[in-house]
Length: 517
Image (cartoon, rainbow, N blue to C red):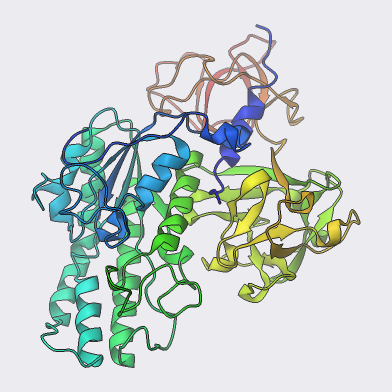
């Protein structure tokens, strides 16, 4: 199963179709075959070329202690760094060059200033060549795992369980977002062109109650849920403050806690060799899917329609309704807002139409559970990744978005069903026709512009290429910077107009230079 990896890339690929005429540091480095994505039939969705320099920073929830085999390389054994941790899975899936310095027990200090387990501060592994850096850090700063293990030991009848200093934990939290932000800024200082992704921690406990796998009192469980919530909030605040991309693993792993039927984390008493309350293989795969989703989208959003493999019809919100529970159905493609889905990687793989999320009814996991539109809430019912052959998979249920009975009838409500590779589960993303297009004002027009390699990159546009000359209908979701004639220095910019006459003279027309967002 692959993450919903290339909605933005698919848009860029279509843009390119109709051009106008005119380490070291104790980490392990790994890469995979360059043809992986194409061999799996996903070349149209691949936004990252093989060879991306990717650095993974973090604590045990990134390193994967207890998951065999241990990575090769200096420091891997001392850090309990698994060859199947999420950074390794991501690198293999997308063909990245990985430097993984995640280390069990790491704090923000171990990233910034203090060596650990025989390796220097993790940020020293980040070089100017890095283009993507994932960070999972902060849990050990607030004794998350230490406290839940101590409480479980005590309630479970153990001895020498250690203590939990709630006041000390509470005193640490006010500075945590700033500490995580310091990590982001240190990464950027070392790698100015890197995109930084802050990955939250796995959810360990159910939303309420406890179970035999989690020997905690209600008071202890409530305190640990509070730590988890505040940790996620601090990470999100750091992402907002620094402009890093948030990969919300905490939200995506709800329903996969240690008490669930499909856990992504071990229980308090795991199998021999496994580590209490730490991610298992399924959890690392789920995390890898989410990270790939954000990596391939470059932290941006993109708007697409999804065409069915049966009749070429579209996933549609019935009657453009916005009420919670509005059915999502099969319908003849018509280009309306009811069929425009925005993929949001920062939310961990949500699909939104009409400002609501694609949702599995009631959070169900059974075959034939219908799908609907619902207020976005961050639950697993609203997470989607891609599987083989352009299927859309809900990781919480492990089932695919499905056209019931392979029907071609307009108005058929869609459902989830066991993934089977059939055409009824193939949903091809097609870029929204409202992206920049060559044509008259407001016309949309055909997408044009062989974007890769066209024009000079703007210094403030992240190296993105300029649009070629011509008349374009401009959407600000696609264009980050526009400059009027006479101000092409990069110093004076303004919000992009809806319609821009780009780089060509016309009677009474303002000339603009625009860069894709």
